[in-house]
Amino acid sequence: MRIGVFDSGLGGLSTWLACTRYLPDAEYFFFADTVNAPYGDRSAVEVQAFTEDAYRRFLQLDVDALVIACNTATSAAAAPLRQYASMPIIGIEPAIKVALQESRGEVLLLATELTVRGAKLDKLLQLCDPERRVRALACPGWMEIIEGQQADWRERASEYWQEKIAAHARNATALVLGCTHYCWLRDEISVWSAGNAIFDGNDGVARQLYRLLLRREPPAAASHTDLLTLHFAASADADQKMAAAQRLLQGAGVRARILPF
Image (cartoon, rainbow, N blue to C red):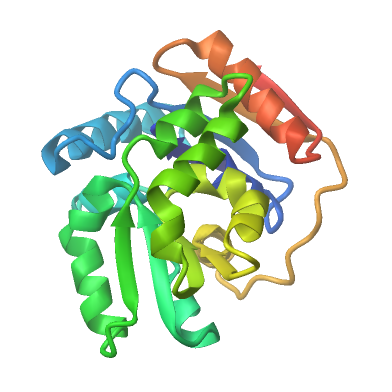
């Protein structure tokens, strides 16, 4: 079983990890479109074109399914891509439904600018948030700090939180991470937000991938104990991105062998 995973950068590695908890024996191919990142401040038309280019790349790899591990790309491109794709397309969306079900009070969604202003989010909020408990906050520049993986990236991410997000999070009882890059700060965000409940869409994507490929409900997620293998490519700075991916995974306590393709 061959599975493609696509993001504008390294954030989608968090989605890939979620998928390996349900389908550990699959062969995974990860493509980071770093030459066009970040997607959050691009137009929807541009992001759709980038995503379609990535789809064609995975088509040549003969994958059995494609996971769009990018909220922005899902918002802009998943629906039109599904109209002609020859494989299942699994997109990720902010875990707003779960957050509303499992928490009380205000829910703060943190996402990119394009996701926040996109029609897909507006439709989702109309459908599942009649009480208007969700507030969406665009976080321009935060993804770039995480993606850059400079030596002080966690300190810079903390400064960003204090300057741009902390005041908005003060009254929230739950946070939704609407960008897969933000998931790499999950532990820090829990501390910064004084222990608020935190939700993201990665587990939902992994479970849906399992359902579509195996035609049954997924079991409980397994923990990462074995060495994982990931085939990796990037549209720019591939060697540097591969090294950065390795550091991210090591920092999360994940043993992985990353191979170029």
